[in-house]
Image (cartoon, rainbow, N blue to C red; front, side, top):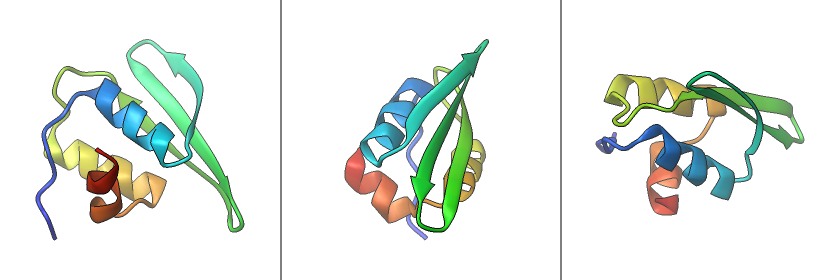
Length: 75
């Protein structure tokens, strides 16, 4: 598995929006994004930290069902 980059929460949100996710709401420092697919609705929660930990980013991508390669291509 390729290494995940250490990036900010805002950059993660922008990248997921490029992949078709829509910002639904924000509460404090967490943004909730969703995407409609043929299989149903996918969603994830992104913390707006300056640097998001690699393990947290991995969890976000699993929630969103986005591969690491797909995510890195959109960066």
